[in-house]
Length: 210
Image: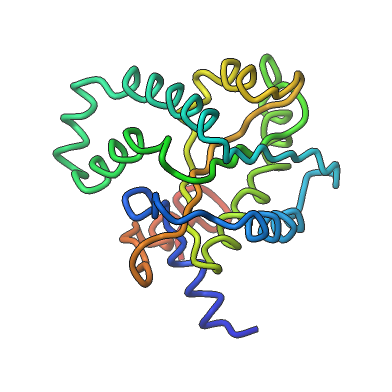
């Protein structure tokens, strides 16, 4: 493998919000190709319980966006907004931008997994989400490699039942996220500033570092 290319992909796949191209459509063939790649990700027990709801219809995108905004503004209290404004104003602006423009993003993808997690224990929850999260991340990587941006969001899940009714998602299907998908503007992305992994890596026991 060309490790430089692989490492660049892995370190520059960002959550794209303000740089989503709201005008240019994304070809259905690209979406399907990336989904075909994504399902090669590992799934717990090889159960392959994944499903993907791809929303391109303008009215349904608007409906999903309305639910997203409703949940978003219920979550972002003035106090929370002030706290984030002080420590992370750049990302704060991008959060609000996406909330206001989500209906304009040409493609929404909702990764889903078979089964209901309400009332289940931690093992069952981890096992179920382990059957969809690697696949969804592979989807984001495959899109990025083709010049298409996305963002991992879960805000609309506060109104998952309403979204299910809007999109005809049956029981017992669990929505895991909502990915707004569009070509991104600009040429590339840079690695993000992160707490170094070695500061959060423990060997053979908590807080045991090398």
